[in-house]
Length: 288
Length: 288
Image 1: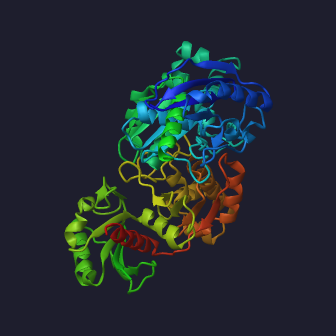
Image 2: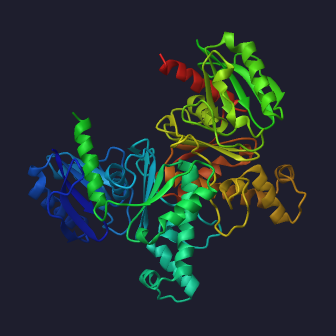
Image 3: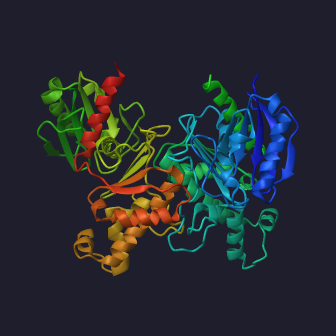
């Protein structure tokens, strides 16, 4: 069975392990903090690859930032990581082929192959963490758009310039439904500038959680009417606190398209690595 | 060159003509009011088909309502037409193959093959009339979703239940940007319950037009971030009054995906028939 070395890089941590064609993790999971500079990040990649590349057929990278349609590099800039990291030439780091995909897309793919959206050709996965990531699967393929940047959950929930999003625009779905957004909603509703998402979730502050969940619902309705998916999958550290049953019932009351499912993700914290591995290994098959 | 008899049916009129493989109209355009009852609608179809079917290779129907992925019939209900019309068995009306597509999808296809989005694999067409229609093209194919109902422009522009949409949900893009929506915006801003869209457009009421156009802009930003299209095409009787240059400039300032074009449609009033004909004729090729 073929295997892939997989590396997941985000703003705070770099993980790596080895994945087989079934999406099983078959080696230790190594973890290090994401270094501050581009040179140090590249050195970390070189070290990981040198150590493992001879054992595997291909390398899969799950990264923050939008990835081009050739799966070779990053488009534009990505927040929260060394500014010149997007210029990384991933293929130059290894003699084996290096396949790169956006982390939310990779996680959506893991759910599609072995998780909550398995067997369903049309799905949308939303990752609720510090930000909101999105991965869209259309007819059993990742939907990437003209450049590779599709699936950004920056559509407006208001038009009166109420809350500025981290992307620079106003009132995106992300700035209401991410962890950052939930904290702002909590501040607005409680009047306490020091309130945290932890306070809200642990303290079971129902009014705030309901407001946040109904903002999520508003977005799901739009996504369902635009994409007519089989399922919307909820993931990420905050995704667990959404009520999938409630959201499925309510979204199906309001849409003009056909009924869909809302499900929690099942592939866990390493879904990005699993998806990048599965995508990379699929690529080794189509190359033959 | 192969030809298709094409029929376009909406809430008020039924049109028919003949289209060739280049999307050219090669016969007279016949027009009649849409009858009130399902029986009369079926009789009108039978009459049109009996008259023309022997001259053509296939029949293409452009209809209001969402059409299934087999292109044989209508999903669910459609407003503004006989309630049992969606149960029509189109194929039973002719010995030639009958290919059915939603009117906005068909019009988007006409733009893709011979119009404003020609040569561009990823496009979204929006038709601004009494309502708002949408057609999405992904990798040179119509995007239909799991059931065929995708591309409905019912995503929320507000979450405070301000304006009820014709679809029954609150605050959809359609109820702010359609002709119906523009009239409500004009009523709200002018305080005059009798104001019409004609008054607004002919009277060059800039404040109202700008508010409407900025609601359109808000939607385009979300669509661009979700779909990363090459182009968004504006069509319909009200589409002409949108400033494509302004919208293109502003949308590209706010998105996190890659730059796109905003263009006016070029295939005119019969785009639904042209697109249905082109789709049907393409189908005759793939069947061989």
